Length: 402
Image 1 (cartoon, helix red, strand yellow):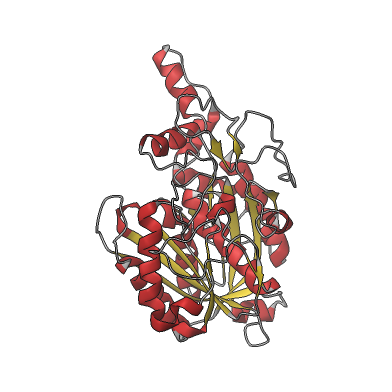
Image 2 (cartoon, one colour):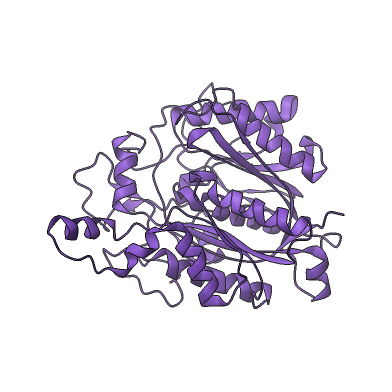
């Protein structure tokens, strides 16, 4: 018998600062988080902006942020995990750890400069460039369970981490799991996207809009406490939402480009909706992948038409990357928290930067201003290089899910 999976706590960090209130005051209030890059010299690159935390907004507990310095993924993950466990009122003992991260590469440049100068690299952060070390370190520092996995499949990594935790709990393999992801803007990853001409030179991101020029990166870390509904009920925990369904799919269309008709994304979403046991028409909001690139947004629109059919035009959709930036491996976890906020508070986040409609993107994208809405189910979508796709269906907490 499958167990219902619920969320009982979360911790979140973005360019707006630490915690949910920072998201309310930033993203939901219609303010984009993009600022000139100060962590490194951006003059060699075409783009010069990202959604990075520069000390404005709520501070990260226990993590001092200095101008020109990138916070460490390990430290921010720890702060988010502690916040999630405190919200869940759980100590995390025996909880497996599942993280989406490609590692912390903030020390990479210094490492290679030391090597080139025939010096012995001494920056301890280099060890955190190993993705597995971050899950192991978090588990050791907080006394979590021994099962510790890092998912590295790019922009679906933390969505997969959440799905893996939900699957484990659903089949009775654990009562509680800690799942999330992390990415903080670093020069080497920024440079790679810039060289691939993926970054917007306008300094803004305009998903689904005519003339959109590309994405911008952003800081993001989120950790969620997943739990079986039975276990949460027995210990009197507050349920924030139910992870009603999850799905993954690969279309293997292209190394980088999405399938033009969104076949993989539609397959992942269809699997998540079927697992939730609902009809597509019951989805009241879609948090889209919405990168703001010419190819992705058209393909995702096509996928949404496949998913919802004639009902597609009636489903509100937004890209929160228009405010937070693209948080790569952390994207799915942060956007899951944003989607939970939308469900709990009855307010759908807007798509910022949207000025003129693109005929190829013909859905309701909630342009500019957050929208009140009383919804029960929401769909969060993510896609990544190599044709991998992932989806979560989240349900607002009720007496039935608590």
